Image (cartoon, rainbow, N blue to C red; front, side):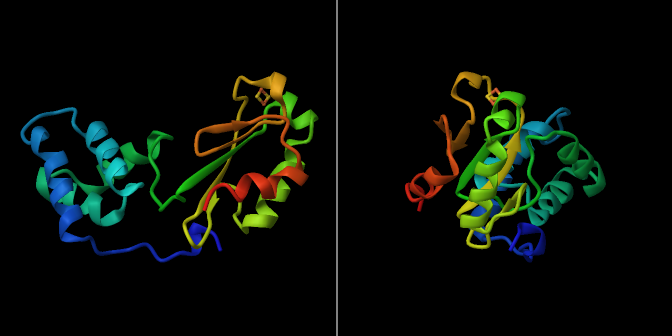
Length: 164
Ligand code: FES
């Protein structure tokens, strides 16, 4: 099932709250802290969760709507949980021509992960991306930062098996 169908946690652990307060601390009474704070939250939690946004809002007296408008503006911020391993499959022209769509289909079938979604067990997130600048290796698949060139549907299970 995709992350969209997943219940987003409303509660936050004490320990995580402490870390969030540490991230906020240098920005009290200062402007321009929202982006570094959101980056910090994402680093700690893997995504920008609603309870975390609420803490920032309460502590810095910034409306949640304002925080969300910044978080949704920048593609780097994720508002739902992400998988331990991010699978990126290139959708650029060279990769497309050489069959990236079939690689994508194989990944979706074998992981049950929808495009731009996350598996229920939070193992994988799957993201189609624009040209990765390695067209000579097309089709290109990147898992957890490691590039797999000339990816083929038949090779997908072997690649995925490395990420448990
Ligand atoms: S088109 Fe895929 S790496 Fe360039």
